[in-house]
Image 1 (cartoon, rainbow, N blue to C red):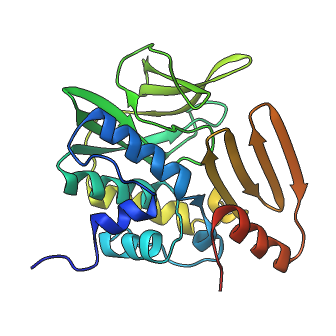
Image 2: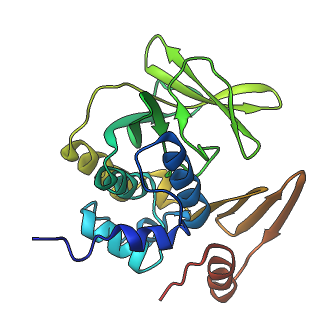
Length: 256
């Protein structure tokens, strides 16, 4: 029987996409950009101690129908389902986020490898920091720039592959992953830890992030930061009413 809830056309409307639907690198790039510029990375349910479901219908209901966002397991989970439905060949993998080193970092981030135009592309629509705006061609050492952000992929002797972001001081690691395939149970375990462990980063503060054409908008623990080209604006937000207004005005999120 057809799935009545999961609907590609509704997803396309959610990310304001009206382009081509064929399996190609161009389509993949536009979908990836549309997602990160329309759907905010956010941890509001985790912070509120609400359960996080990774079931496809639940992700679709939350992100598409209810116009919410999510974090990596939700965002990349939905994106993988969309791409698979469209005919892309997708594999999912777990990554270690860089925290000064990788030595004490568990595999708590989900990334995707997607085949298009005979090449492999790293996709990640669920990283709230200096993450990817568009797919990264899986080619070691190639510097790739999208909307002013430059990333590259490097081989790591201990952790597989390293994704790095270019700063004024040079390239800095973001996360590392291997190409070992993962199963849904692997993400259930990682998601459970990330969303329920008392010391999990995502349980410590409310956070949101949204990519724009000229920069990025982020909210973290009462601080709103807007990067617009070379201009940085920072504002302190206090009080529940002001926080709700900020989430709605800048990220399109409405909380009950």
